[in-house]
Image (tube, rainbow, N blue to C red):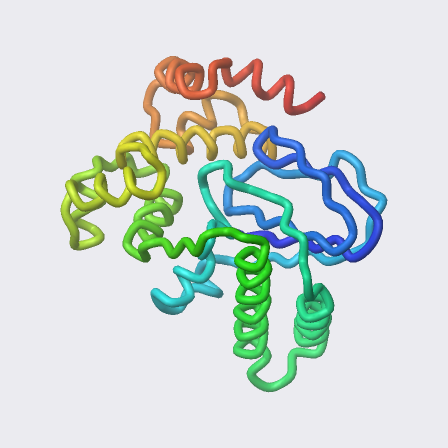
Length: 243
């Protein structure tokens, strides 16, 4: 499960994220959450692409909340192009991360973790300076999202997931409605549909194989599920994605 941050230092680029198009220009950044379908449609830019995994960055609840603070990395189609008021700070930290990765000095992973923290804090400050309201998600809700994303093959009810997180079904529904306006079950359905798109697009799996990867015993039932939640069949979606 990788999180992606793209900084456009100069020039411009067109990015597609989950079928939505975004224009990156000089000194702007976009963040992409694990599982989101993304690619460049046009690119005439210079900049940086930073990738890090959930397991690498999220050592405690503070790290977890920072990833999703002010909707930086979100599972719910809330991507946006963010203009940077102090782009040099972010760019310098990305250059230092690049150097750490190449040279691997003593405790370089700790250094990289700290620099990612600084980058996310700076981007959050830019969002606040632009007038965004401060939004701080609940760590329990984020653990719920990642637990679902990490266990697609194992079909679990909301009650079972709540038990794994040592909370209640009603609490997960309360948090889901607060953060997304949806029930916990509908959040799960949305994540499954997004993963199905990823498998069809990136992994180029057959519909039957995608169904198996997502815990569906019957490919026909999976196809109906996909059509219900995306308004198109898996086959039609894959054909459009490959054009």
